[in-house]
Image (cartoon, rainbow, N blue to C red; front, side, top):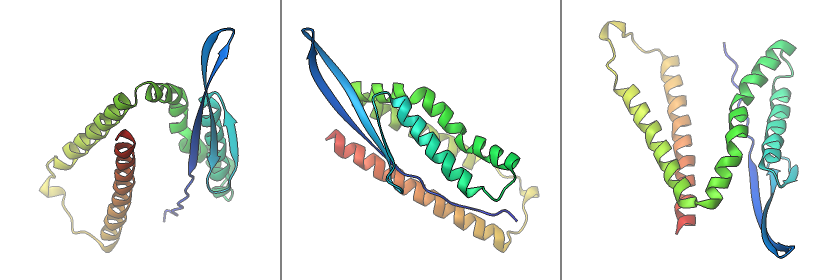
Length: 172
């Protein structure tokens, strides 16, 4: 039996732009503050990589706490899997932030295109023909699993919808 553990980690990022004169030249500097919502820990940064490192460290701590009953090898494997997406985000995150600040409309359009691409891929996967010979009667656990997945998908769609609405409001 697989033991399921759900954890949430929320982060709030605030940016502050400072425009100043230095040696007769206009300068612009963006600074930020990231806060882990659940425990209030925060870090100020002028390099977005520092914010991503803060997130990665906080998620590492939470994963270590959640897996403290596991062997150190299994704990390390879970931690690596848990943080694999952050390695990618850390590489591309600062560029996305810069591009968003420079041209928010373009980034919003890009986000919409990405979402549409994912919907198309999911639609293609759903529409693939199921071989009737492979069918079997569904068990109660199958129904429970499907119900949990539908609830999870509904929650994810609701969150995504709220983000899109927020972006639309900000756009107006």
